Length: 451
Image (cartoon, rainbow, N blue to C red; front, side):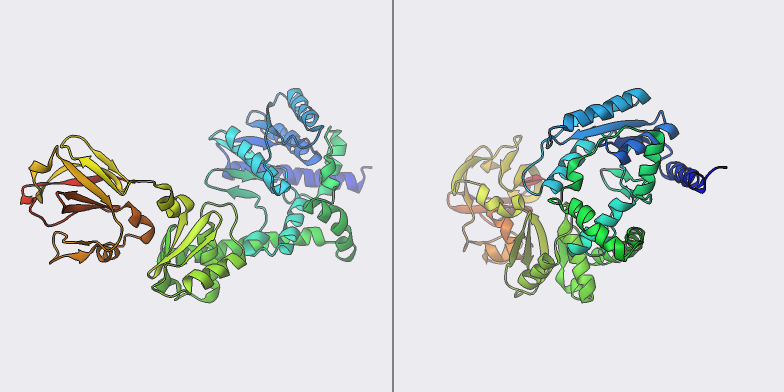
């Protein structure tokens, strides 16, 4: 008579196969699978399992971080296993940058995944229930919010990568049992038990203590991640609604932001500050933005740098700028004065952009074409009689009215002929100045490409 344990194992194995087939049918019916395989027990079982279900739709990839002496041998174990099952396999060596070793190794690994993943492939990883529980616990200890406690998703769809974790609800004990029953070969990474690393410390030092008190801790933490994923989805819906009201990826209106509750302000700022980064900024960073920039005087050009972005307040708006955008004034080494010749059929390239000749109802005289003019960088204090205005106005006032930001004003250049101001080149285009060189049926430089 068969043991109840054997019957139980068959039941959960069948349930797992069924859930994988359902996922594949509902979400990935026309996709292939790139399986990230470290050679460990869980990833070797995943490779075997997906081969049994989708033999013609899978490839494997082993990432050699070159951090341990036997890492190349582990890659050979994976490659040999794939050869036995007739699975295409990539072995990729990567260089891990200095810094937080766990984080930098992860960055290198995912960069390699992106390099090899084909457009129709989903990345499949072998994270299991204990991995999920450890992630929740570590993020809780690091002060993560709802998004952090949501941990890993079974199906994680990103802009550049879709990740599927079919074993995420599976306890490690069942993985061990199934791997033993199948007599699968696998490797053991000694760093998995090295308490120098946070995750290994959690697994070897903290885990047993907590389980003695809370025997169902692992499943409870994993369940908490699922609840947090639901909460995070709801929260993100609210954040996106607030974002559309307040601005876009580059700026937020402070007057609209002020109408939100304090909690919604913090959530929106956290998502907005993240930009193209992988993770959101810390709560301390959000509070610094509020304190040092948002709450600064309205007439102040407050600025906060939190790598890699500059957060700048101008009037009643905050802007998120890259270092290149904000510091370009320091990197553009242009002469204060230079000569320039204007041609009818030859575009000119200036610090504010590229311009070409364009006929207009009222503009510059044709006699200026093919002659030498002077180009002065704006220094401050200039007054210009711009066409359409009465009398000469401070150029600074015109730039403010046109919402040309202070960090872009170094691109402003003044065009002169015989000490007569002809106009001003700006990031918004050419502004014609009233002068004796103006006429009806004239021409103007037209901005065709911004800097």
